[in-house]
Image (cartoon, rainbow, N blue to C red; front, side, top):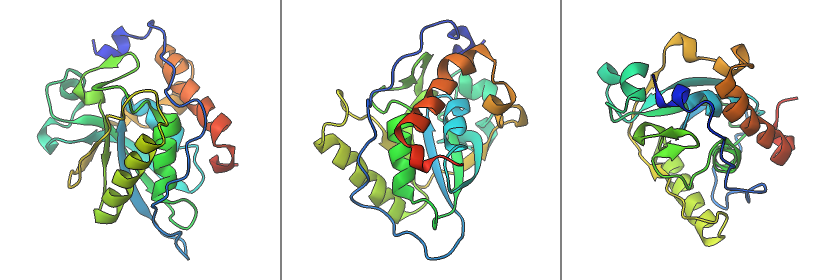
Length: 212
């Protein structure tokens, strides 16, 4: 049994940020025309982070998967047991004319997970649940580093941010049954206790960024 299912009945922890985070001072410019770019984030259970970003305006697609390891070990059994270097992650395909990478980072830090928890997220423990950003290019790496520095200097959280920046890492999609898990299983105990509160927090703190 994975740590996730063993921990279903434990109380969910509150996220660190009590209000919306400031906009990134360093960001990519809003594109003049529609297109697609990708962002890969790891913030604990990929069911939870996927459910949050599927609600964000300008996001075209979200895929649950693994990042930080090789293709051979990118499977749920090995990853959930902590036997790989992977983290549970999501790949976000977004329209840069509708939402910027920096805005996605703001939601990632402010609603999707708690960036002050080291090698865990809520009831899930282990490096496979670490907080990490996997930038697609040098610009995204620069934006992510600048935003972490901005939040740190602003004392946005009561504890240090432990989010790692790990460029050059390939994303591997997870098994089909993990995709859209929250939408397909809204009454699952883990979903009710851990994923739905994060979706509610997104809608409460970032209403202008939620899909209509």
